[in-house]
Amino acid sequence: MVKAGPGRTPRYERGNAISFRPHIRVSSVLDARAQAAGLSKAEYTEYLIARDFGMPECAPEPNPDTDDGQEPLIPDPTP
Image 1 (cartoon, rainbow, N blue to C red):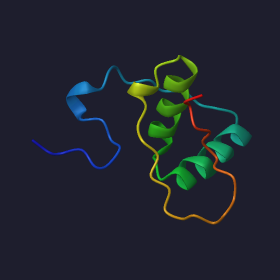
Image 2: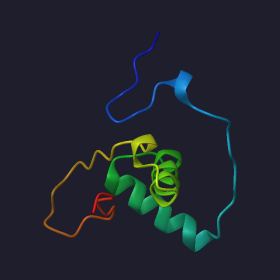
Image 3: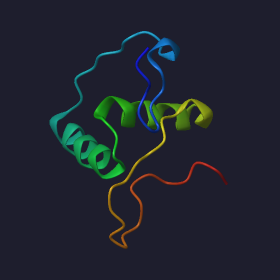
């Protein structure tokens, strides 16, 4: 069995595939924020949905590569 990378959910815990085509501007922001978080676009989308549905335990962990002193693109979901 292939072990999932850091912050990644093992394949057997994944649900059904979901596909969508966001507006080009939304897609551009999604690309930038996913890259900054160290996640794929799919993982970043999963993170946002899980957080908004009140299920942060199901969200992949962000893996930002740099600490450039800017505010994080992903807010801490814990109060």
